[in-house]
Length: 147
Image 1 (cartoon, rainbow, N blue to C red):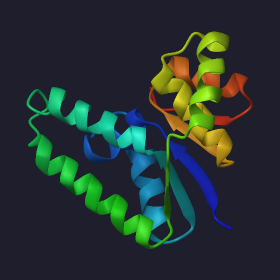
Image 2 (cartoon, rainbow, N blue to C red; image 1 turned 120 degrees about the vertical axis):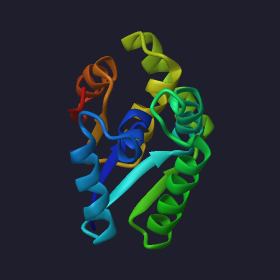
Image 3 (cartoon, rainbow, N blue to C red; image 1 turned 135 degrees about the horizontal axis):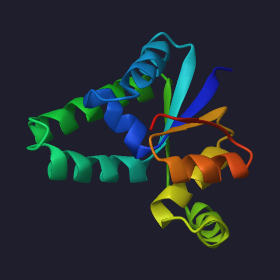
Image 4 (cartoon, rainbow, N blue to C red; image 1 turned 90 degrees about the vertical axis):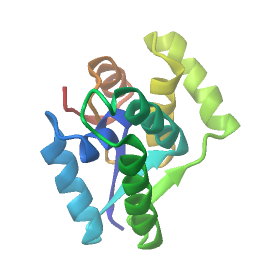
């Protein structure tokens, strides 16, 4: 079985907006396209990415709806190839996330990332958020912070 890499929203966005950490994310996507790794993300990430592209697209010189559609096309391709997994935000993940909110003083969106990564046995959680990275490591996940 391929190694699972959980990408939070900040990491996924780096695939479509070139910034610090984009090269590592591009490498993971390249490996996923070759079938050597599986990218794991939550449906929550898709919604958050839409907000990021909408809110910052103009500032970044992006056509936000085009970038979002490009992201969705690539994710669908990887899903069909079984090189990506989309995690549903289930009641179990929400319950686990709420525990993490109080334990690590996180936003629920960040806690959902950790709970989802743990549920699917991801080898590593990749994030651009330092606080999320610290909480992820405290929860025993191998973590790569792109910040």
